[in-house]
Length: 81
Image (cartoon, rainbow, N blue to C red):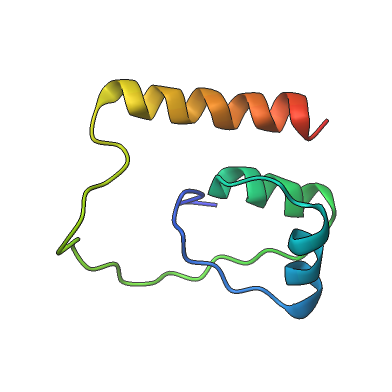
């Protein structure tokens, strides 16, 4: 995967049901590792992303970015295992 943090996802009925019943993760890398561990087929398709016109990224500071990555890593290592 070249961009595990993009919010762009297309999912089939089985994956949506799996997420609804069993997934309590918010971060995109978290959800991706969840699917890969359960042997779901995951395919990456390039899309053109436009520059943000409104709003502000969650990653507005280095501290928020670090907190996000620490939370994702802890979730993948501790919660999913």
